[in-house]
Length: 263
Image 1 (cartoon, rainbow, N blue to C red):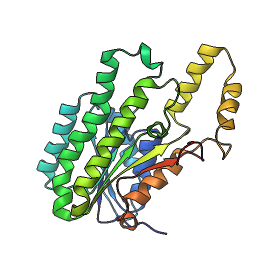
Image 2 (image 1 turned 180 degrees about the vertical axis):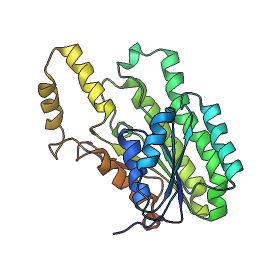
Image 3 (image 1 turned 45 degrees about the vertical axis):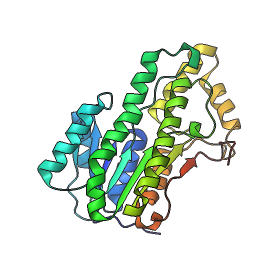
């Protein structure tokens, strides 16, 4: 099935690497004009120049840091005002909080995670929803984690924050459905990304086990018996961004090879 997006503009967070970049590439391949959003200007320019342009799109980028939500929101609002355009697709995606037992987390750890994820997502949604309403079409897709269904051991701050984002998204979905705007969450499982590698390296340092042993233990919990690829997560995002997904909203969809032990 083809998911044509040639008349749509997309704003994709955390899009210089990993899942965010794969999402930007998938949306561009379906014809969307993509604006990348991250903090590394040089890397953003490189990725933007490499995106597919099957419909002759002119992709661009915005430089902003998700750890400063107010400035992030202001950057997007200024862009929309100056360009007199709208974003029809918003993909909220940024790096997850550091791992660790929840009792070791400080109040500052929780505040920083909520600012970078929940508050940043909220301000971006506030910036783009008016244009979506005017167009009668909108897709807000949050890339979060399977921890919203089953908390993951050793990721206390992340589990808490991701759950809050999922509840925010469900509430927003109900408020916007009548305007032709859907809000959904994609929940990556163990996916080969920089974060995945760093979590494994941390376990190696903590336990003294080899990388191979730790990966073998992880794979035992995944029915598909392999780790996911960023492109597989991006395919789910691209579908939810498409006209074909117009009656799907308020959902949290795992892309995890069957690992999540809940319906």
